[in-house]
Image 1 (cartoon, rainbow, N blue to C red):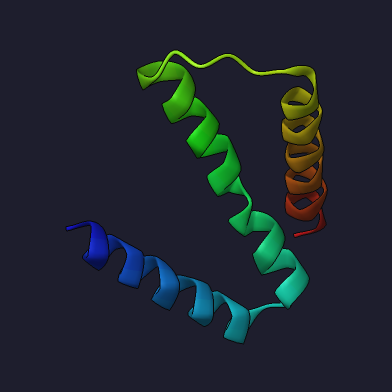
Image 2 (spheres, helix red, strand yellow):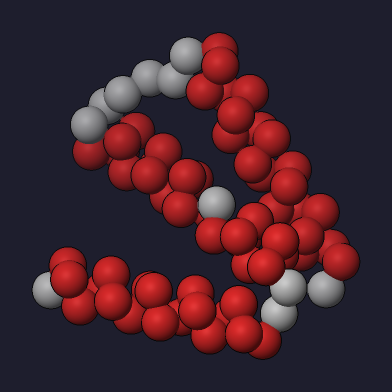
Length: 70
């Protein structure tokens, strides 16, 4: 199941790269960082340090900028 989802994600990313600019696709791909944070917070009860908070803030701001350009 995990392999199938990974393969579908790769196919989707390659299709997006063919249809749109690489910088935009790679930036939107960083949304996976936010999802991994949510999973680690929800299921593993991990807490973020200061550097991680800054990193998530930068990723989120980059995503907002890319989505605003569309």
